Image 1 (tube, rainbow, N blue to C red):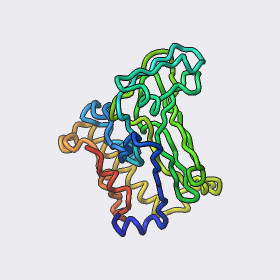
Image 2: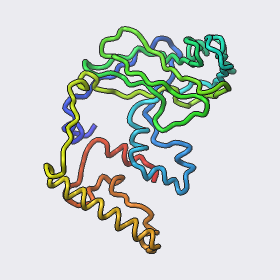
Image 3: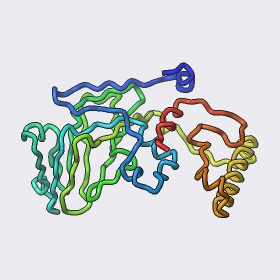
Image 4: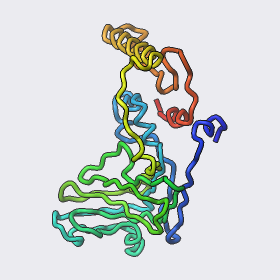
Length: 255
């Protein structure tokens, strides 16, 4: 990691992943792209830079093989049936209908430990939509827990859903949970932050002018398509050029 990045974050938490068995699913860095974002006209979804940043701000635990899960609408664990081409014992290590009520449970296969004050947020991959099922999110106090957790998905209606090989069934990010209770949002006015107000006004005027030219069909503006200040990490007022650790994830956007 570059020294400039280390200066931005004085403390880097540890994330240790202890394997429960030999066939644990692979953990990979979060991927910036999404199929549905690729399919938008001119891939315009990537112009919303916070989306690919969120997509890549963590780690994915990915499916080692494909499964199908069917829920008949009942509340018993046996009302969810999991099928796969893989041997039954491998499937049971990964996915089970443990709780009933249309909940599909995955075992990540790791005991995670983090530095004091840091927890793992376990959820579905950001900006990923699965028809018929939704990811449940948990905040796990991995700075002290000596046991594992499960990743759970809840069917939104009876039917069959598929998790394909290579798809993320769990997304991990780190949260400084010990600090959250000590943070109090402060409501302020721009009168208290003159330089920030100037930068904001410059950005707002530039955006409005750009959209006006775009609506008028100005050829150069149409050719440009959209403003790229955020992707490039550039303050449109020119008052400063930010240089910080998120820049690499920001530049992963394929637009």
